[in-house]
Image 1 (cartoon, helix red, strand yellow):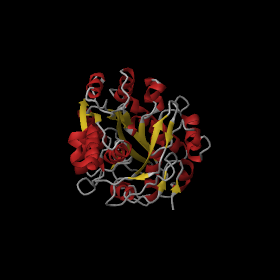
Image 2 (cartoon, rainbow, N blue to C red; image 1 turned 60 degrees about the vertical axis):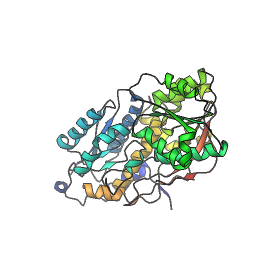
Image 3 (cartoon, rainbow, N blue to C red; image 1 turned 135 degrees about the horizontal axis):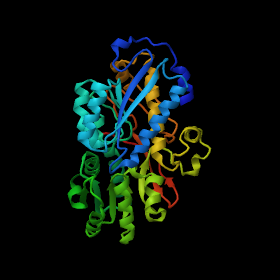
Length: 400
């Protein structure tokens, strides 16, 4: 049966005596657990820095409430500016100098790709990476790396099926980042469209460092497409939405769920410009009145008001970060005081029916030694000009 684990109840549960010897667990002492992280606090996708800031506060509050098994969490987070070489430099610093027990929520597809082999060769748990690239669920080849959010490839499969239901003979344009993040959306469309892909789909790519995507949007409009799929981070997603609106293009528009923040994307774009955009969700949208009295969302809102009063309650990066941190707490609870790297990884691969506070009803986290994709369900939703309105059932994805 699905079980909710909250920060307050977990604190007491995790206060049990340790059973692991500190000398057997790098990054763990009798009084401390060191956790490492990199985040783009600066650079082209610095909007995601809200995730790292939320984690910092979450662990500070946890420490104020007694920590875990008598230990404080030392959360060491460095800015990598979303530069893969800088990420590798900072991760080596975390592992070799700071000697962290494990890595948590390192953000970005390209940046995690730069450290993927290194952390697996060093046998350092690389947990709940903040990217939905499909390759983070490959325990056979990379047994120390695990994702958290739904796979981008599965997300694209769901969009492709929806496109075909609405337009049996679509003309599809796709704008995507020229990296593994964007290419997963290509794979997802190909999975569903099969041999029709090459005749139905026209694409335009961009680099994450490009100042704008205006020319790519105009190029895609010129193809005569009546469907647009945008796979971009917040900055470029906002630019694409604005440009599509301003040139009078009215495609059936699908948008990656990593760029649906009301505060970081829809408001700066102009709320009316995105009306009708379709995306997918696995988290509750804090602007949706359906969750105004929801216990999980009230828990998160209480945390924000008490500990991050400056935080934007319309920015879903905060609610996302809260639930990922709760998931890590569940893993540490299951360790029962043994915080060795092997134990942490074993318990991360043994989540059964865990329900964080801010995930949608029906979204349940499960992992296993052969399942490193904790979340496989999503629900479609549409932008109304004020909020994201869910429609249809929760859909179970299948990783390919």
